[in-house]
Amino acid sequence: DQQVKQNSPSLSVQEGRISILNCDYTNSMFDYFLWYKKYPAEGPTFLISISSIKDKNEDGRFTVFLNKSAKHLSLHIVPSQPGDSAVYFCAAGRYALNFGKGTSLLVTP
Amino acid sequence: DVKVTQSSRYLVKRTGEKVFLECVQDMDHENMFWYRQDPGLGLRLIYFSYDVKMKEKGDIPEGYSVSREKKERFSLILESASTNQTSMYLCASSLGRATSGANVLTFGAGSRLTVL
Image (tube, rainbow over all chains, first blue to last red; front, side):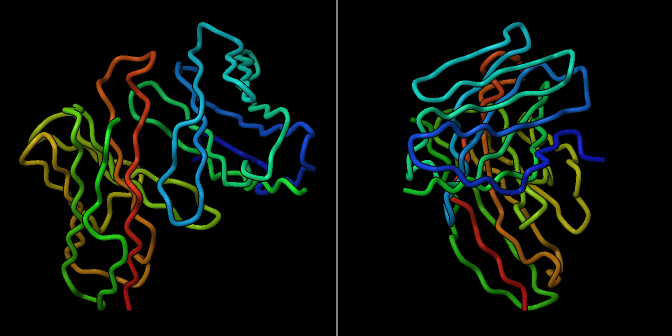
């Protein structure tokens, strides 16, 4: 059974607005959470992470929020840019990472 | 920057052929992983290795084997390729088993395998 779930396969946002990508996990032992971005025909690239001792981590336009009680994390991109259009994977784990199925983000001009 | 190099970007093989996918990393990482990516299924872990000559099954090891004779190299082997193994294969590495940063995976560019 999938331990990391991204329930929205796709998301479309206008340039300049906020993109919010969501992720849920089931295993309370997970203590490290990451977001990866993937363009077609390329490997995923690391975007941002958060450990279980924090509830927020920010890096430029990207912020990850962690709600441990709800076993939920989200990635906020503000402002969204057309170059952000990609598939975003949520990953969680303790040693080996478990990945969600991905959310395809399209940022339109 | 850590570099993870997958030797073949695109391969076409026939059903029943033996297939080798090679992966090399250049930053002395302890851990190496093989994932496959399929539409609607995301990234699924096939095998991983925490040390030389050591391997652990991931979520979908059936039909695959791996070899890690040297720290920097992790090979994925399809003993007898089948059409349902047509996929994008991604190799990754990470520094160590500890949490808080060590789990960041660096991925290679991927190997797109088509089995006819």
